[in-house]
Amino acid sequence: MLIMPQLGDTLMTSLTLPLVFDLSQVQLTDQQFYQLCINNPDIPLERNAQGALIVMSPVGGDSGNYEMELGTDLAIWNRQTQLGKVFSSSTLFKLPNGGDRSPDAAWIELSRWKSLSAEQRQKFPLIAPDFVIELRSRSDSLKTLQQKMQEYMDSGVRLAWMFNPQDQQVEIYRQGQAPETRQLPTELSGEAVLLGFILQVIPFS
Image (cartoon, rainbow, N blue to C red; front, side, top):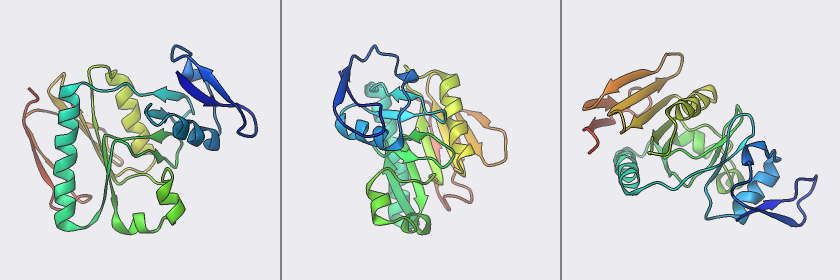
């Protein structure tokens, strides 16, 4: 069951809805969405740029392992360079161009993160990460995930990698450029965003 805040001007009593309810038709204010997430900490929620509510499916063992491995490589590089902050898939960002999204891994340059207030850091940060990673799980539609990647770019993300184990590919998104698709294995560079970060990507097994 999903515990919904009342869809009025203020947050009052809660409404309990079954998960079969068409959540894409639910429109919430920012405060109501925040309260909804707080009320349902075990249910990962997102909103797209049009404000539609999305309940994220849990991932299987393979996807969870791939996600952790990719995030660990990013975290190790950042620990060595101290150039920014790394965020897990539990972090939800309020993107400037609309949408509330939780990348599988994200990175923000240190001065940009420090420019946020303490309250902004504690809630859902109103900032687009500089870099994001998304991993396609078996339940993910490729088209829907590609639209999500475009949301990131429209909101100011500078570099993004979308890993597609089903097709043994990775899509690279850069500002002002068409996405680049590579077959695995391949070597990925953090380019001018993640200075010195090199990732050797082998085929997903």
